Image 1: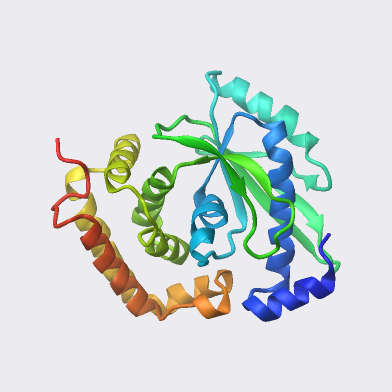
Image 2: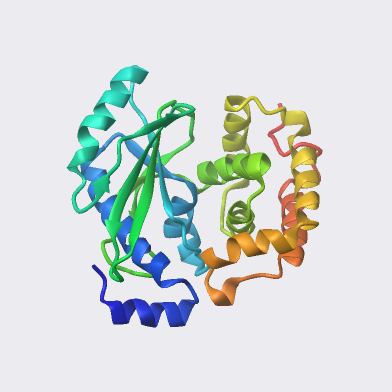
Length: 270
């Protein structure tokens, strides 16, 4: 458990809530255990992006869930049985029985934080294999409570960006807008991003010809609701990084248009 005074100092410094900072360390503790318990898993989503890639730019936000791909040649039922059997090896959490949602196995890991409050961390194992370009063993650590760093299997930046593009297209949440905005400032490989995105568009059966146009239109619509997007997202972002969301979204549109290089489609040319 983190020292309460350290958490209070970090809360004052970052503007993040005490409960979030406490949870941030618990996520590190869970990741530290998961690697040994589940060598088959690959870390993805906002936690991977913010603890690995966006941390290098100093623009990380708090990400509260652990999203994993469980990569195995075994059948679906065997995967589920394996995860159910091993999940109880995680220590210092009260783990709730799982729920299966759209080929995802979800566990809520409950704990009492430093302030005597009940909280939980959600772990989701995605059970269907998705194609990817590259996976690496990478140092994963919190940019806020820098304890319990671990080496974990993580998708390449371009693979994670492609998945984030799909998430943005499907749900248009502020967290996805924030992550992609800064991903486009990293030293990503454009050709590999386009390859990874094509894999995701094929997997999720999204029309490649219209994807870019529809994505930009949805972002334009999101800009009209920028006040509400900010209200639902700012508490995940350090105080000094909280944007003017209307300008932020407009700039993201400009960045995506620039990254597409004037293409009508963001996908690779055949």
